Length: 248
Image 1 (cartoon, rainbow, N blue to C red):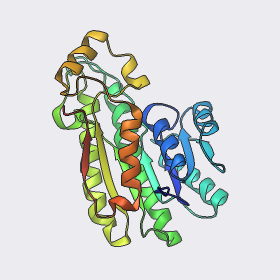
Image 2: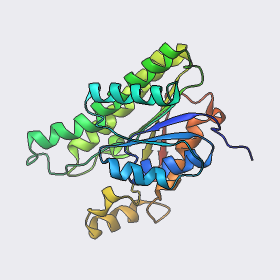
Image 3: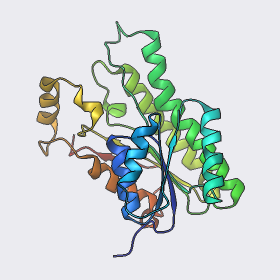
C-alpha cells in the first residue's frame, strides 16, 4: 500500500494532545511532512519528536488571533518554500456550565477558540494556497462535534461553536470549490482525550450507554477518517460532515 498523502505538507492545530496529536502521527505515517501547532509549544514539540519520517516542524500558535495565524503561516512558507495544502483544525476548548449560570467570558472564550479559530486558519490557509498557486487538491478538515448537532446539557457554548464550524465548513466548501480546495468537517462523539478526562465518570458511563458500540472512541479512529479526507481517495467528498460516533 502506498502512502496516501506522500509528499504533502500538513498543518495541524491543537497538535499537542488528543485528536490533533493522533492526526499528526497518522499523516506522518502516510508520508506527509507535518507542521504541529499548539498554544503549548512543548506539547507540539513532543508530538513531532515521535513522528515517522523527518523534516517535521513544531510551532506555537494561538488560533484565535488572526495576526498570529498569518505570521505562523509565513514561517511555514519560509521553512518549506511553499504553503501546506492539508489543513486540520483540531484546536478546541471547553468551558462547561449550565446556560443559566455560564459567564459571558466562558461563552466568548469557547467561541473565540473553536469557531473564530477555525475561521482564522481556514481563511489564512486558503489565501496562502491560492496565492502560491498550489490550491488544486488542497484539503481542509475542520473538527466539529456530534454535540454541535444534538446539543448537550452544560455545553451551550461548545455546542454552538461546533454547530458554527459545520456551517462555516459548508460555506467554505461552496466558495473554495473553484480553486480546487475541498473543505469537510468531522463530528466525533465521546473520544478518549485529555478533554474528556475531566468529565465525571457517571456522565461518561451515561454517554457510553447511549453509544451502540458501547465504548468510547480512540483518537486514532478519528485521525484515520481525517487522513482519508486529506487524501485523494476522498477527491469528490466536499462540504460533508462525517460522524465518528460509534453510532450515537
